[in-house]
Image (cartoon, helix red, strand yellow):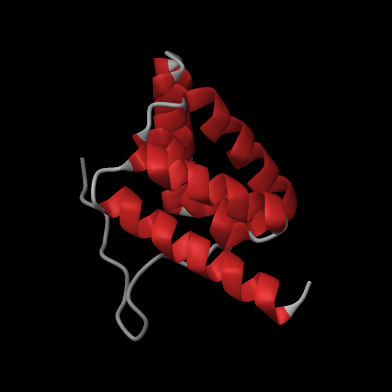
Length: 127
């Protein structure tokens, strides 16, 4: 794509995020769908779109976007935020037990812990 298209998609993603953060998820969804149509292979646009769809209560659409994102960036699927978004989409669909299992799923062996760069990740509490 051209630089102008990249810039337009970046602008739509930023505006969509701003709408989302200011309690207007439906406006965010519209802008982010346009951005995702213009450049369907940008994971950052799809992640933002998924968050907007969840905020708008559109669970099936969010779930479909997460499936697309999983095909584009399989490494992201076990990231805690991605598991949280999938669990929230499943909750919107009424699939409570599957949502719990998704959220509680342990990351695969060898996955580095999530933490602030330069700081160790917090330790899990003993039950």
